[in-house]
Length: 268
Image (cartoon, helix red, strand yellow):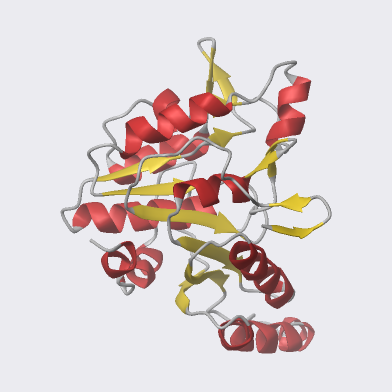
């Protein structure tokens, strides 16, 4: 489907990926916490006795260790799922520079290996009850110049979970992401609002400065649900116990994720 000049979401000419059950976790933009949410979902499914695997198709901003590029996100996801696969299998394409993959590839003077992504997905999804895929950036982030995250999501045909920030500006970002997903024929499972601040500022001056921000945060979820004709699946609080670096998920975050019928969404 060509929605506008330059926006061609048709993947009919691409290889057919294996049918699998799972979720495709994307974000309204980078840094919204989709790695944390994807890991928390995987951990929830594992605790429910499901054989869950995780997949990070392409990772940038990787560190070098013993001659290999290591994705911090893949480490976190693997720990949450107790994955049987290696980090290189969970994140088959990795780059050093923390920029869009097509730019990182040019900096590394190599091509983005799409075939490695497709083969990696087939490997990781095979035999699992569910696979939780975490994209990179948002849906329109380019993996290669002419192959974006949205194309990969369309090929995988998994329900899409959109992770959004709680603060001012999220209505626009969320609705744009929902619109892009539906324009490509993706099934939007719903939105997870992340980093909702439960504790108000203590000082009076701070409270005055953030009154409108608090109003926006408290009304954003209902606005996203109504204007986007979708469900806000969970509202996840800001929590000091959350750390991708330490592979830690705070109890309040895991509780919020645990209130969602992920198995029903996935079709298990």
